Image (cartoon, helix red, strand yellow):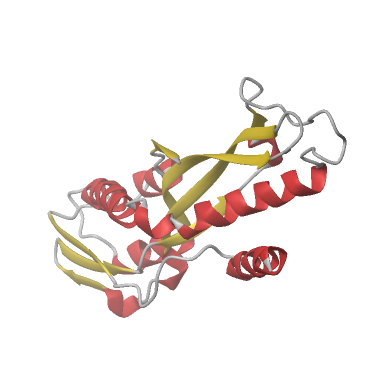
Length: 213
């Protein structure tokens, strides 16, 4: 499995704060809280994960059938600022301390456009028709590839990267808003990071478990 990291910061927040009081004025607590909460889901990191899937249909009398393909998933993680509570923000003059919600998966996509057969190594149909890799088996392979990617989310370093990006972005924004001392922390997640449609993962795993039996 290959992971390509593509960092994207939410520029919208930057422009939201440009109109805030200049550094010569006292930062407005109500305005800061309002704009943070209205920013909703701040996507701070995007991972493009590729995985090669493969299958072999063995033929004892003739040529074996092989299938190799590359799949791609896009995972976006960040902070849901709608979960930010007023007590999570403490302001004293030009000093601000913020405890942000835990990093979570904002979006997971596994589009069919990201599937690409590796023709160099694929020979999907053998001499006999019953010894070929059919559409149903390919669909199962693609679903298994998705389940495998989802199961590795906690090992991709998403939390640390998202926290770093969020901290850098908010420090710039809050500095423009007039704050001179800025402290940003994150709440601990009480569970492993999960994709929004975790039930789908369970369904896929159950499907493959039945097929193996």
